[in-house]
Amino acid sequence: MAHRVRKAIFPVGGMGTRFLPATKAMPKEMLPVVDRPLIQYAVDEARAAGIEQFIFVTGRGKSAIEDHFDHSIELENLLEARNKVDALADLRETLLPPGNIAYVRQQEPLGLGHAVWCARNLVGDEPFAVLLADDLIQADTPCLKQMADVFAEKGGNVIAAMEVPDEHTSRYGIIDAGGASGDVRPVKGLVEKPQAGSAPSNLAVIGRYILMPEVFEELGRQEKGAGGEIQLTDAMARLIDRQPFHGVAFQGTRFDCGDKLGFLEANIAFAMEHEDLGPGARDMIDRLAGDAS
Ligand code: G1P
Image 1 (cartoon, rainbow, N blue to C red):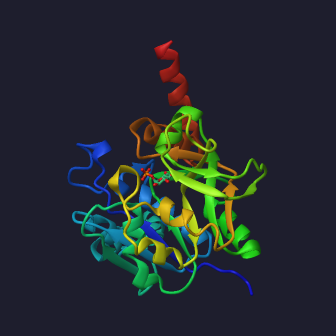
Image 2: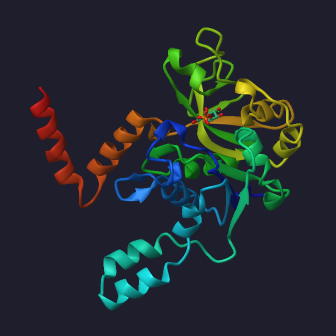
């Protein structure tokens, strides 16, 4: 049987406290990297991996995300009347097929695991993807597509993995791969945010997951873990003995857009690669670097 993933969960309920005051009245997922909001990169990546149904776990104050993926009739009429063909095409890219997008609210900020669990009835009994929009990944083959290819071959659970400096293990879920190397590694253990020195490795979980529906059973226990939150990492750790579990050391560069410097770096990197803006952005960076030295 071919293994295929049709549904993706986007947890977008977070308060964005690290980006205040920018995120006071605007969801952090709507912060733009060059010319599109973070959440659109995640949705585009999911589409490129064959995802057909999009489930957003939102919270209060997040309605701009719903508007972003809907028609804006006034804008479309205006652009059509003015024959702004390119802008119209950009706008059409934001539309998701009717009936294939759903929103569910996480009423309280109880953790990433709880956010994913809130989508359980919409996912049902099939494998699904989770994408965290804060983790922006620049890659020739989109990261989730790389993982979907591994899933098609091996089935089970597949998570994105990246080596991080030893002193950063306390920021991530950390994988025990039993010392294995290579692009696809077995996951033997998982720990959420271990202190440097007590981590099983420096191989971190990055915000892309393909998970089997049994993880909802584990999440349903509502047990609190690191930081007093219901952690996805803890629920996954309990599945390791029951099901195949692989970490994919993906090809590409990941930017931590939950952090101001990481977000700035993403803007620079994506501007430099941008078809129209690239040359101008490179000149600007050279000029600014020259002025600073
Ligand atoms: C979450 C997960 C963590 C993972 C990280 C990736 O943490 O809990 O396991 O390594 O995303 O970005 P957060 O960044 O939400 O604290």
